[in-house]
Length: 107
Picture 1 (cartoon, rainbow, N blue to C red):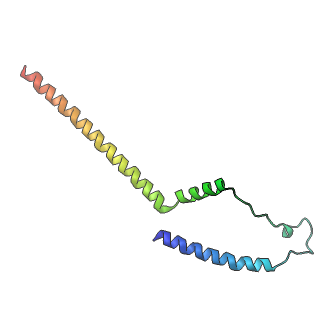
Picture 2: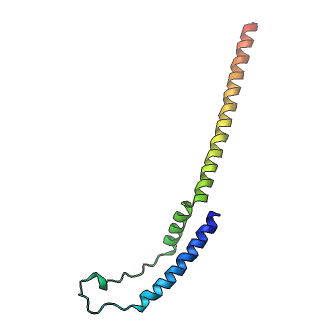
């Protein structure tokens, strides 16, 4: 459900950008503006290398709610397994101690 919502939001964002970018392209630079004015500054598009794109994608992916939730559930499962293992070791130790005490009493 969350991923579908994100996809819809992304579609809407792309449509908005397409509409507003067309309007911006129609407007021309202000030729009467002072040369040091901010109105003349048009930032260049920054091109990303493949490695940078992959890094950004992974960064965004790791922040997704489903991914974070999955990581938390996996971490919780591992913690439960570790606790069960510790309980088993403790029980064996207690049983061994009890058995040794009983065997010492018999002598």
